Image 1 (tube, helix red, strand yellow):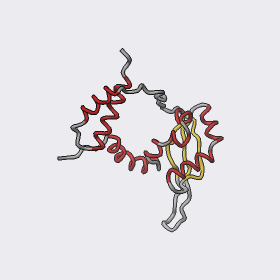
Image 2 (cartoon, rainbow, N blue to C red):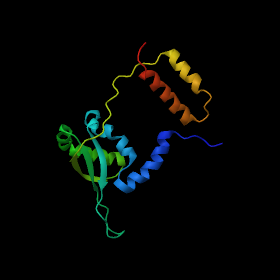
Image 3 (cartoon, rainbow, N blue to C red):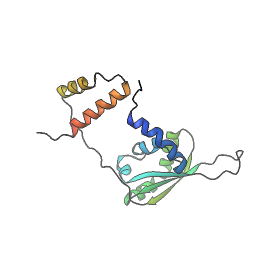
Image 4 (cartoon, helix red, strand yellow):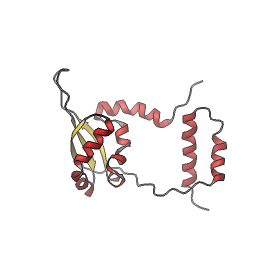
Length: 159
């Protein structure tokens, strides 16, 4: 029997090599952007690529690259003032000095509005979710389905 994988992990496995090859960036960095720059700036900015200097041979020394960030409006100004902090946080996130410069590109960013405060789930609703997912054997899939059920319930309008 084939074991089901969480959709996000499967998508990440497909997209990460493409992003790394085409843009020099990882899905993990894109997903962690709000933690790196903060929720407010993440709404109107996003990393789009890392440009690395070409190495003529394998013996050439590694040089950090330039992180290109798309930003809208005033976010560009705020990001410009936080450039060194962003470089430090990105390098800390990646675990090595990968970036030494940030280049801001003013362009529209498809943003997702912050979810705001989530409605709490009642104990009865949680028991129903647990009962519906109890027969799922794969732990990762079970956890993902529980989160999905909770989000569905939180998204319903009050009767």
